[in-house]
Every structure is written in C-alpha cells, then in structure tokens.
Amino acid sequence: MGYEWLADEPMFDPAVHLELTEPDLIITLADLGYTAVEIYGTATPIAASTPFRILSDEGARVMLDTARRLRAFCAPAGDRIERVVRNGCYRSAWLRDLCISPQVTRHLAAIYGVGVAPHPLSAHLGHLNYEPSRIEAAVDKWHHDTLPLDYVMMVTDPTRTPGGRFEYFTGTKAEAAALRDEGATPPPARVVAPDFPGPGWAIALHGNMVVHRGGPLVDLAERITMVNGYVSTDASIEDQSRNADLIGVDDPAVLYADWARFAAWRSREQLDRIIESVPFGLAPEDVAATLESAITDVQIAVDEMRAGPQQTEHYE
Image 1: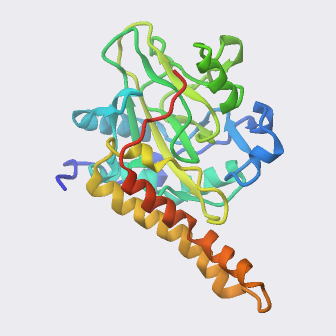
Image 2: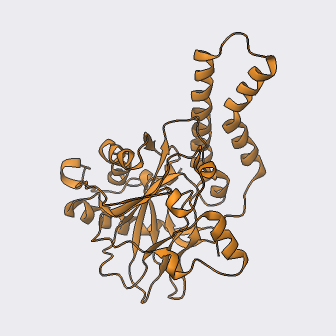
C-alpha cells in the first residue's frame, strides 16, 4: 500500500509519555439546545469538556516531532481543510500506540460516561491538521465530524500561536445550518474558544453533534492539532458516522476494508443479541423487522460504497 514506518522512533511508554488529568467542567448536549429526542440514541449526552492534559512534557515533545516528520504526507481533505495527514498510524508506531492506548481510552470513557473503543476506521486515529498556506483561510471550516466521539489535542504550543484558536458553537447543528443558509456563521457571542495551557492538552468532543472549527491565524505560523476518534462499544445505538464523506479523501486501499470490518462488527453484535435472546412466539413480521434492523449497518455500507463520492458537509 506504500506505507513505511518512520525510522528511529522512540517506543511509546505510558509511564513516560502520558500525564492524564481531569477536565474541570463537562458540557452536555442539552446545554447546547438539543432536545431529549435528538439526544436519545447518540453515543453519550456529553457534548464537550474543558481542556485536560493527556501528554507529559516528554510526550508532547515526541508528538510534535512526529507531527513534523509526518508533514511530508499532507494532502487536502476535500474542500474543507487544506492540509491534513490521515492514516498516520500506519507510518508512526509511536502515534499508533498513543491512539490505541488503553490508559487514554479508559480516561476518555470516564469523561464520556460510556464504554468506548478506538475508532475501527484507522484514518480516524491520529488525524493531523496543519496550518493553511494562506493567512485569510481558516484552519478548518465550521463543521461537525464524520465520527461520533473524539478528542482534539494541541500539538504545537497554543500559547505561542498567533490565532488559529479551536472554537465550538454553543448551539445545535440545525441552528448552524440555518445560519449557513442565511449566509452567516456562528456569531462570536455564541462561540467558545477553550484556553489550552500548552501542547499535549485536549478537549473531549461529541464530534458528530458539536459544530466546531479551527479559526484563522493572525500571522502565518506553524499550527498543528491531532484528533483521535472513538466509538461507543454499544453497537445497538446510532452509528453517527458519515463514512461516505471519506470516499475520495482517504486511501481506498485502507478505507473500504476498515469500513467493511466496522459495519460487520456492528451488525454481528446485533445479530449475536438475536441469537442469544430472540423469544418464541413473535409474529413473523416482528422477527423479520428485528433481523432487518440488525443488518442495517451492513446494508448502508454496501449502498454508500456503491454510490461513490458524496459532497462533504460543512457550514460555510
């Protein structure tokens, strides 16, 4: 597939590279204006956290060095963001081990209040965003993510970066879409720009539900963030993924295999529940509907793979 490991990397060591702390505050989807009906079936009622630390000083140093070495593999992500690196976990063993770290996964699960696992689509692990080439361009447009849950980590020192603040909208996706349709974007009074004390700090995000962006720089400067994705371990809830948006963005040699495994896992989990618990005496239509529901993820994946590239969603 053309992937080669970076040479001379340190081995990821949780005792050396991690320094996990708790966020001071948790914001819920209800706080953003979502209704109980809209929240039901999503991965978690949590919307976002305030910043918390993931990496030690040494971990932050290695993360920055790794991101700089991976910059050579930058490419655009559709029409939304100019410079990203996807599938970095097939190039950096250190980044891979950070992204699938059991210690970090347990920490995020405690913040979200639900069981989570690193995202089965490898392109969602260790996604790196870099500064744009033009000062007038935002790092990333207002958008919601193509996956349910993630954290956004500062790789470069945010206290020394001229602008480029991470921002999120204190409203719903429907409100952001209405603003877009009026030719507007989220107003400053309804935008939060968390204060990250330094590199290696992150916020937990319900990425599929929270509208956010990387704001414009004041001066062109190095600005790197890392996004690591998660899914709920409960396959019976809504998937919340927009995998079709990844067609034409991610390496097809990797994307379709990962996507197939993800859809198959979710359907297998639901089929196993039927094997273990379907009772006698159900009406034929009820049994058929139960089976049909269990394979929904596989059928959606098949239809979207065959349909081909889709227009990526954003709010600008």
